Length: 346
Image (tube, rainbow, N blue to C red; front, side, top):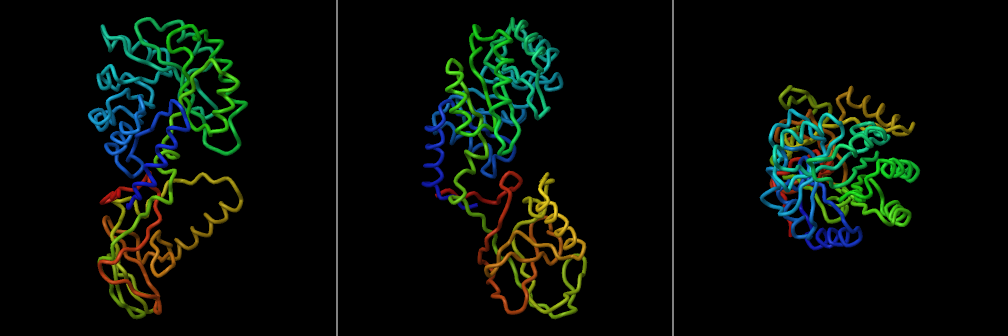
């Protein structure tokens, strides 16, 4: 992945300046950049807190970022003693976990945020559970309430207003940290509206994709051509000894399943058009005609066979310009599911 450093850094700085209290999310594969690089970049941005997805990611960021580390996955008893460092903020979504963490921490007072369940139905207290937890915060340092909202363009205004009513009803406002609300997946206009309506609360947006991948024009992914082989109709090729259905060139390029090439997660699309596209792609797959993410001579090319672990074989029809070994070609990838051999930031 090639990164236009000036453009990327300018975007990051603008995002942090635009959203007071922004919490960079550094989880998974680090959005393709790696967790260590995101932790260092967060320190450069001057933020006081970052968020990781789960406890085993703390070790990747704690030496590179000096501030607080919020763990998004709720604490559970099977986590063990990981994350009892005073810099770590734990997410709590069950009463038994609040008790368990307090017992595990011993004489220290673990830092916690209480997560309120949203329409995602993923983790968190209901309104009654939040009130019960609010009455049982002895022995912990309370850092606020968390809201993890669903993705989508329909807006979350009505839901957040209802959730904020539950926060107020829990009677947390007079506690230290009781007016801090950590939110995910709220747009800038929604945050501005919330801050205007609930001016006595501090909303802290946790942002991952829109921060690290928000300047898409600053990111370019390319693969190296490793080999080329002309084939005539009927020639065998590949692991599975397939036979070419027409003349052309087999182009071997870097990138395979170990990098995330050819691996897909369910799209979850709901529109008729998107579902029709899925059915069409399924028909092509069944016929052995699978479009790859690689662009050669201006067009997305077909896989000659399923990707290998570290390389892929493409079919280039006769008449197309054949790249030379060592040339680079563009690749369209999902950054959150791709492992790059190199990330080159200018």
